[in-house]
Amino acid sequence: MAGSNQFLVFGAIVVSALGLCIGSFINVVIYRLPRGESIVTGRSHCTLCGKTIAWYDLFPLGSYLLLGGRCRHCGAPISWRYPLVECLNAGLFLALYLHLGISAVVVKYLFLAALLVAVSFIDLEYFLIPNSLVLAGVIFGAGVTFFVHDVSLWSALLGAVSCSGFLLLVSLVSRGGMGLGDVKLALVTGLFLGWPLGPVGLLIGICIGGLLGIVLLVTGIKGRKDPIPFGPFIALGTMIALFWGRAILNLILGPLT
Image 1 (cartoon, helix red, strand yellow):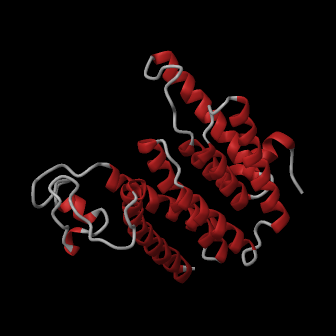
Image 2: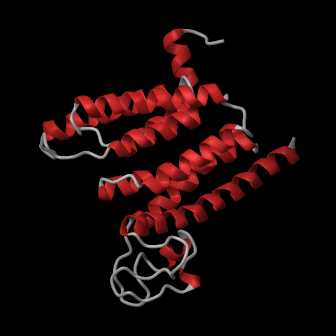
């Protein structure tokens, strides 16, 4: 028993550290991808003074804390987004590890979580869901279906078509009120979660987004014609469905076979 607990703790530390490191890479994606810059080549640099950041200032979260949240060269504040993305991604990785254990299934959803973090922050800042991230999600999601069997091929296809098809209908009816980027992202989440969890996650995201939209309108923070990025709500609904979707379905519909 003691050995099992030690292994669990060791695994949790490793997965959390991995989440921090991948979170650091996600920050690169968030900054560079909308600007059309390479996410593979090119040294990281201060966005204000342009100075190249040394390797010892690139340790996830640790460097931010040691530098007091400021650039070593010019003293400019480093955006809060950097540690937030790293900690959020590490937290999701840890939660998935504790929920799913060490398996091929957890690798599948670690990829999805990292993708959704990147998409959410890009959409929040630029009102954009890059096609390259959607394509990466489709390729990985379709490929992993043949090796990880938590979702059958038919279930994955049905989830993708139902989620993206519903949002496409909403986009057509609203005459562009729902962006096509959201439609493409829903295809990815439906592909990963399959049927019926994909639609459950989408419905949860729609409910949360709708409630927040009403609050923003009532408080005057947003006007009726102001855009609200929907990608983060799809991402949030997807993660809720991944962790508690079946429990929610069981509560509403009764035990599922």
